[in-house]
Image 1 (cartoon, one colour):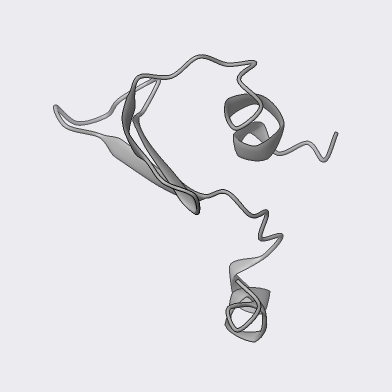
Image 2 (tube, rainbow, N blue to C red):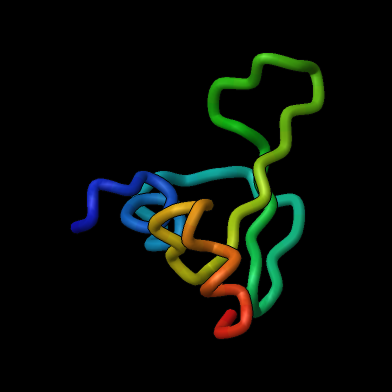
Length: 61
């Protein structure tokens, strides 16, 4: 495991979430501990270790 709750638990189905939409590349779901009335999280299905490095990786995504 990479110690990444999104990749390790949510995308692998270990932590159930209420899905909004799921495509080949992304998953959108209602946050498990919302801070707002509508708190939706959208994550890529490919692990991105750092947003700083994302610009370099986005050509591969």
